[in-house]
Image (spheres, rainbow, N blue to C red):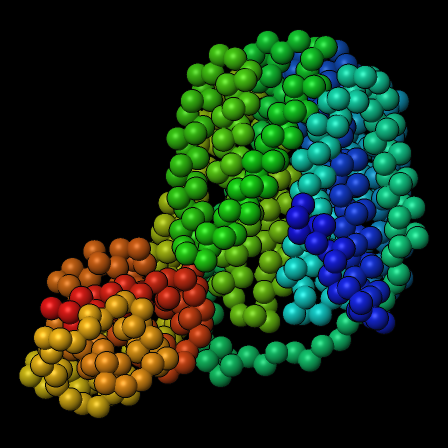
Length: 561
């Protein structure tokens, strides 16, 4: 929400194309917020409407509910490329207006639905002819400069998330006051307002043309085998995590009814519960974004999946609806960061020129997971809701194992097998080969661009070395006699490297075997993210920086002996 509001102050005083882009970003963000509100306002009433038109209880209507929920994102994923191509030819404003009109009509007609097929067909219309999020993203990415693309997309996502959080709460309150079918009409009117804003505020602009960023020689010469496996792992994780998230749209109302929520309070309880879930997920995504500066996205996602299994287990034994809602909110506070972490992991695993394309592919994988889930969940719930909880626990466990295996390089041979050749990387000499005899230190010392001198005798009055000081010397940021001493010690690997490197470098795993290569590349001005990707298909900048920090701490301790 803060990021969305900040868009109104971006580019203050700008003129020409910059001012038009800023106004378009504001218009699309507000329209995305309204569309998300309108879409989610009716969500608390969808299970009630299906129960009414089928004449059965929630369990018997579970399959219809799963079909109704899954068909919209499925149709969006299938038709998105078509609408994007049409928008490139006829204008993105027309596509935005088309999307809000079709969604408004589809939701409004649900007020007069009399059979379950009517609801499912209208949801298909909403997904296939709507797709406002796709139209909004296409309009933003086509006209925003590369340097401003991240903040612009972040603003758009914040607007959509804020609407998803506010919509169910608004629906629960207004539905209790006006009635279920009247709420669908109210949601349609919200899209009328969105249509007016797009028509007045948005201006079609030609697609922005920027010079491409040339790939480095290292990127051109790299093998893509193991890297492709790393991206595949991240895409699979995104699909499975959103599969679990989508299943709760079916499980949530079923459990509320089973646990005794009365019909007259159902919409209110469901709406408030959904709003709390989206609020927790929003906070989780924001916190995870900051944590990726300290830990890799894959590490965070693996830990999240493992802990989620522990949160899901008590759901099998809840006896009141507030216990279930509490556990669901707690799960969202943990697993809500899944899509954000998946996007970050994929972005870190591919070259800068491919990031937009691969993040879009990740979004499609997540959408397909969301679309596939409700139908399967609806079928399982007819047998027992506990089966769905157990299935989700198993999927979280698979995700955790998949990510841990990817980080440890267990799937790297698959990439080599598919590509037909090994992945070029740094020299594979391990730490044992670099541990010196009497003449041994000179090899690493020369690579660190330090004179081949032995470590000077420790001076009694010399100030103690700090980790930051040694790190600055290793990275070439400081010079002088003390920096030289740090480099001399760095060359004598056997003196500061512990007997069990993997234990000392346990935070970064297999990077422990590549410490000298990492120090050499960083000393020569290498980019941490590129180094991380060459060492591991799921690597990135964080483990490389952390490896240097740990090595600097070990060197400083030895210098201070």
